[in-house]
Length: 335
Ligand SMILES: [Mn+2]
Image (tube, protein in one colour):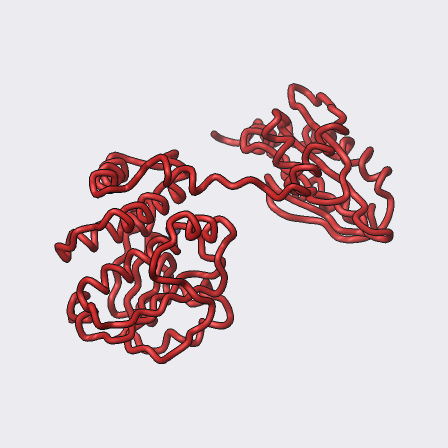
């Protein structure tokens, strides 16, 4: 059965987005539901996601679409449309059980194919070469010869702008899709602005305080910045990277017997030094603060209970040592 026939025959499609649904997921869901309504005006689609990101909520407030997204499945359904994910796991605990009839399941997604996709859905519109699910939805509209109305165009352009990081990742196909959406009535300025979000006031204050307490260490040519704050350590680290640090380390004591560390580095720092914040910094630092540490190469943290000051001094030493140790080994690597 074609997608169009599936939609024609369905009275109650369930349109599902992934958990903590981002603007690409939310906007695709609403746009797809509108497409369904043009094909089947009497039908009642349900839009459900296990949580909606703060930014998505803001986008929904700005554009206020008629079709609403809820967090739980409220009535029965005769078709499932999975949007912006093709894995059961990504739906979150409460919704995973829903995917049990592949004949009545459609997947629309731009992520890499999950091996289980064939077990979930017989009907797949998966384009991993596309920038966003919103871009796929534009194609589905044109394949079904349905005109995109201005409010849907706004949503689709917003999702596309979000997933391409404001066109940082965009080729000619994506750019011409964006122009098509503007021609269909999308207001580019409004879409971009709907995605601007200011962190909470307390978070901004924490970042600024951390910035005021920065100590700078120059190791080789790298700028390593370290600071102290008792809340929003990760956000403070990102702020310090934005200010120009190659490595940012923030320690804090949020409550009496808790010591926490967070760290970030630029991609360039990791690529050129081979120093991983997870294994080279936070793992040993975790021991020192009598807790545990770890994470990724460019983002890592540690939780413990003591030795904050000692650990702050030692963290610089660890970075210095790691850079020295890796220097020989890293430069021998074939490039
Ligand atoms: Mn997406």
